[in-house]
Image 1 (cartoon, rainbow, N blue to C red):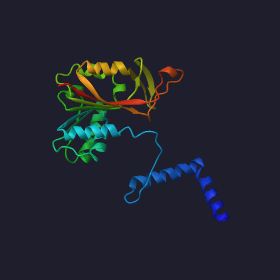
Image 2: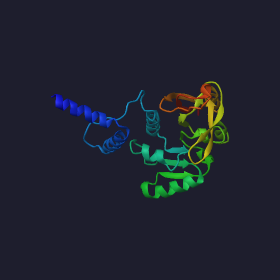
Image 3: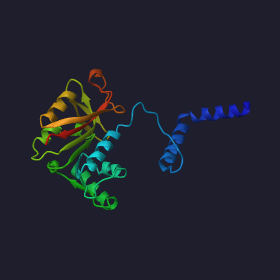
Image 4: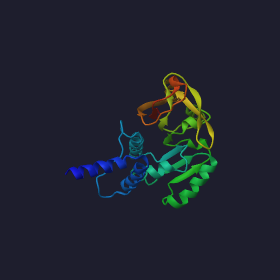
Length: 240
């Protein structure tokens, strides 16, 4: 028994070596993702995964008859491919993605191979949000040159529902920082939370739900009071 205990301790010590641990983690991640029979677990989290509220409200909106989604900053349609794998959706669903023209072009090319039912489309015009049932923006608003409220103020028929996630908000003031993404430096908008909510309420929206993205943070060196220890998500519904 002592010999066996020593063997286990040695194995545990070796597994703790950084390069060995990385190999073991990658192997387990692959097993976790390919698993079909076992009861496996992965990771330790302080809060419930923040993507759940988005899926919860989208499913409810689909069940309530919403069929037109405008995915603002949706890249190549990543959210549509992810969410529609797990959600029941109407046969008449139209999921429109708006991003930079080059990204939209790539999205159209991918959709020709992956979007067998033709649910996905791409638009280079943010004005095409006009009249949609749901505007969804997941981690995109901070990169836009103007606020969401200012963009929507020019729309003739406002989207009835807003699902917003991964928003960097400060409790007192609005400001910009600069983000390095490896290939470029990007202006990065951080809005005042009260000001952000009030700007949408002024357009006739009411906040239905709000949640926190505790896994996201924004640390600005030498600016502790303006750094963020969490991001935020919202569901707004229009009065009409």
